[in-house]
Length: 181
Image (tube, rainbow, N blue to C red; front, side):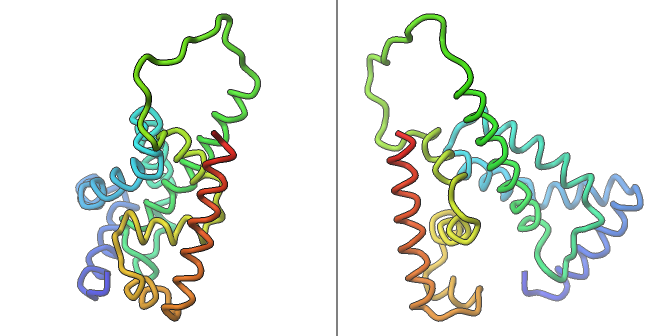
């Protein structure tokens, strides 16, 4: 969001929504929902149940913390995606702790059909283990579909630095994914 008119519009909407204007909140929500939902779905490895839970908690948190949103720092959708990342990480870790304490009463047979190569739950768990910098690099590359040059420009870094971070992020993801499996 480099357009000053977008920043001005979001600043006015934030002020109105924080003051209780439902139409302003709706405008912010509607303008960001698709982006946030797509991001949460990616972040949750495509798991619909986890995505729905993340989306619900994300929007509740965004509504409660709306006054802390600063349009000068980021677009509203980007701010809410940051909340979604934290919510997803917390929920995945909570599910891991729960799964470690619970055992099924009877053995569950393996599915008749093999699952696809990328298990969505493992993807979500692996992403939750990554440091924020690595998760951001993977998000920019694979979710936002930015080129390495665009990533470098957005972060004020050299292309080589971004390539290095991206390589380390991929390796960390690969190791986390294998460890979880």
